Image 1: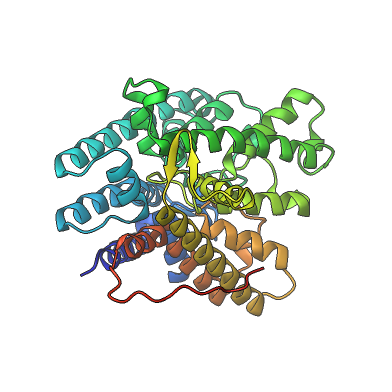
Image 2: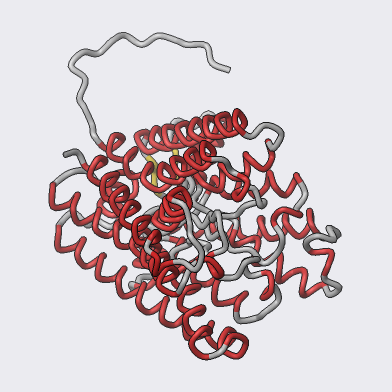
Length: 433
């Protein structure tokens, strides 16, 4: 079986088992349909965070544990397992695995990959335990010991895996200006979404000059996108009474802007009413959700490095440069072609998803576009439209969430498979633009 089929089968199997577990009487207080169970299991395994019912009031502790378990396996376990399986098969590991694990870090052997997996597991354990302990300082006084500890653990797992699931019916709106929530949860999903290749470089003790090109591009892109998204949200929503306008103090508005600025690209948590944002902010969020986080991470989207390389290639074209380079290193033509392929396929998937959704949900174009972008980027933000989906709409979103999570590895397999042409043809000119 080719690696893409193995990965798809693993994710599909986990989704099926998760839906079956959620249908058990022990998992819910009120009955849920198979459609509800499949949608929720897919959202958890793909670490998206879109929900069709309130997690906190519908599911029991066991049901919430099932969701957290699916989030953990979907965000980390299957990714790690995929690296091991594909390496054992001697097959290319796709865009994230092949390019960043083997070329940038020279992890060509099984032993090196095992060391990377060990580093990943250590990072998961340390971050999630520390996050749960810190969040319990806020949740335990309000919810009690047992409920507070479980809520802290659930949100820590959800945040580190960039899932966006919350046991609160309105997300984290009730904790919009809580200092711990606005520090710990963003720290968790930034660390989880920046990529383990970057963490390996940063924590290895090497000087910044010795970091890989991937790490430098990823950190540069993140350093630009976070202030931009925070500042743009603040500028667009400053006087909106449904979002920032309800806060009298400037620090409170900046805190809410900070959280929304960093959560939009992949995490899916919200501390303000997303349905109340302006259409201009909605378009801003759609662009950020499609960009996503870092490769070899729990984040979705086309990835920050893909976006940065696309910008660099565009600038190089207008400067009439024949070679693409950054930080004293060149970027090969094959990398640029991969970026073009990934971007083109992503645009096609999103366009097809929006088209199919408008066929069955006419009159909600902005909400549909936002929902599809959130599903493909495995973000989980919603303008309140998820609960209004009919069965066809749910099926479309389920497929898009699945493609958004499995698609990059599958595409990377085909992009990494090289074939040498047996015949070379004379060049000719095609008029473009």
